[in-house]
Image (tube, rainbow, N blue to C red; front, top):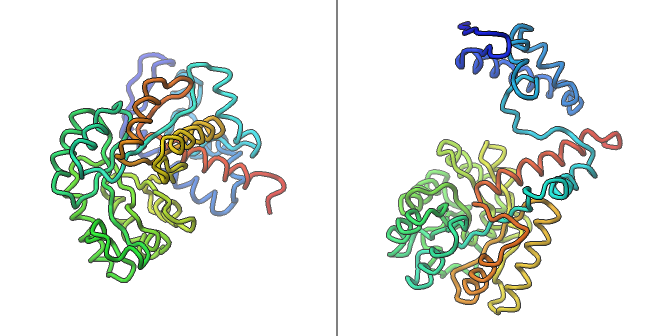
Length: 336
């Protein structure tokens, strides 16, 4: 190991050595979780002491918080009730911590005037582009220059009633080979340069099929992107399959404009706010319709008590919360 010493409070481990020790820690942690189940989570400090030499623990004792600094993604276990209300309690204790909302406008790439109205929304609004429209590459470039997070709105198999929908011309299908679906995915992604993630366009059939999704998730893992589940079916398997392959994933909470009236969009925005207050973070999907863009322009201009964030960050926050609740249920004495 390589050490650099000044005094006890400033002692640091060489980054390569620290990386190696962290890898050892997580291997031991994974083995312990497999053998001991969720109860091992309560013994993390003791496990750290076993996995790391005492002098390494001491070397980092001067760091803020007085504990070994390792990238622990999972939140600390808590009781289900405490985990459920934790975001709200933090908001009351710290006014600077607000419920967080992500908004995605998808079906982008078509009519220029409406697309440019969407691009004029605050940069924290994420924009998802269909690969097929002629103007998609040009509009993606404009959206990137305006600072928006970009998604590829990947067409996926819907029910037979949508078989002739031109937007599904290059859709992924459950009866295609994995190679053919990845070829279509690659084509879609080449049309949407600079994407941070994808979400499904339609896909009520495809997103129920774990085997078909597995090939997509595996391909996405190597690209370092997320998969937002548009939730076009209640039986979607996107989130568990994507997370199983290490791809960040979460589902949308609200569709803003299934009904294209001002009153309906306003009602959905209120529901979005309620879900954000209750859960700490919420995700909405809308479309570049005039009524939606009118409502969002006013809503963003008068946003109080909430923080608007890109959807990639919202997916990370939702994942942490949902996994924390799962761990809390596993750790509960009443769990089987």
